[in-house]
Image (cartoon, rainbow, N blue to C red; front, side, top):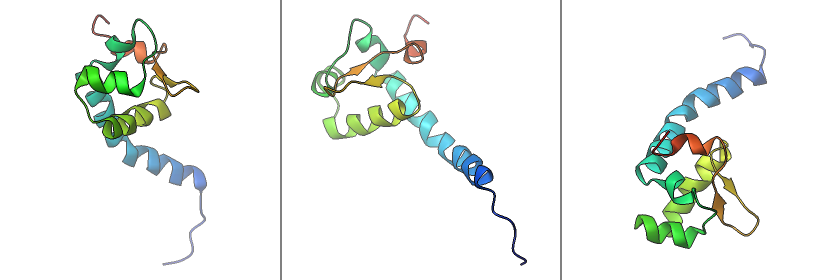
Length: 94
């Protein structure tokens, strides 16, 4: 096989396609847990969200960090999570 030129933009595009499934799965889980609705009236800590969703804190943190990394929700400096405009599209009433 001859040496093909490396194109970083194609590697990035492939990564986006491969990661699309896990992002969709995370969004589905967040929607099923009604996280957006729980953040509607203000930011909440991981502990509060874990109690309200009957979830394991470590697992919930990984889930929230995953969706935060793609712009859904915000993680504040104090570690609390809050709703943003993009995350509000997951509200039950929307």
